[in-house]
Length: 235
Image 1 (spheres, helix red, strand yellow):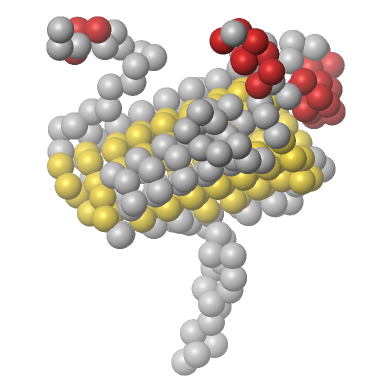
Image 2 (cartoon, one colour):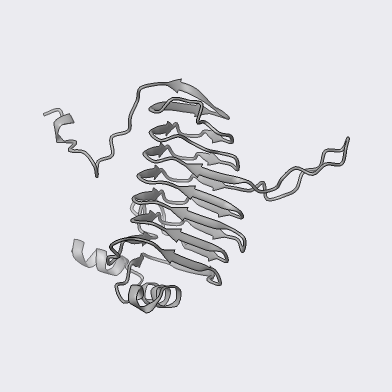
């Protein structure tokens, strides 16, 4: 029964269509993109660059993560710009991934974005390696609208960039705005706002708030796929 559920969860039309439309044949034949449940391709005029030493079946999973937690909805891919994928990637159920025409979205190895999250890229968003975003997060490199100073008529920059360091963990319902740059080994608590560079914070920091401030130091997320967690079990 569990095997049947897994088979039925796959969106085979989306898998075949996307892989052979967006990738060179030598990559597409390996079906590296897996899609689950309802998928809408809003726009696929952009480009995918799948840069990995070893391209494997289902190394990019889209639409499945978190589907057991939330009501079934549509995962949306709107790709007018460039999407560079440099390793395993998992994009959760009901996410919206939008890369505008001049945007470059880049992901490292083992990046996981939770269900019902939104990524809007107009300029440049970079996720490094081993990153976890929980559900209902928002990652934007744009204000979406221009803002004018009424005293001197100067116009603030609408777009910027976002750079997420390796081994970062973001709780649920976090907003990441343009200008955000995080160091490696960084934890952001739920319901927080990030909007600047945090490279002056030490590694292994925990931050939180709206906007975030330092909460704790010398704390490290245990990534289950990298460490044996059985030694932590209380039995």
